[in-house]
Amino acid sequence: MSDISAALEAILFSSNRPLKLRELQQATDSDRIAVESALDELREALAGRGVMLMRHHDEIHLATRPEYTAAVRRALR
View 1 (spheres, rainbow, N blue to C red):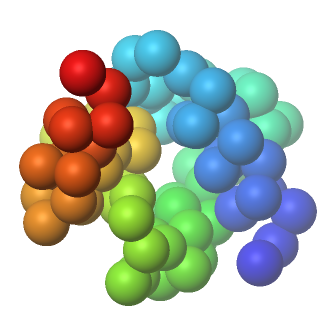
View 2: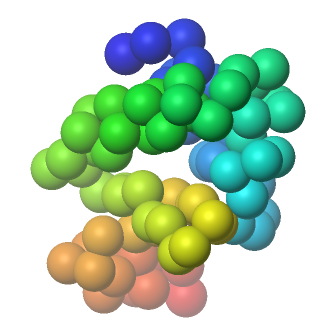
């Protein structure tokens, strides 16, 4: 995984809200193309894991995969 992808993972994991692409660019001091590429790399790296990269228009965040929602709810009661 590239340094930018790892940084994006850490940033998104730590954030309590979806972040705009522009915010991710600024946080990583990277251009849009580099961040888009790193997000694609992160999405692939998370395949088959308990969390996934979610994107709605220009906002990005990490979320629990739907198939693990029940287990998360039981754990966080």
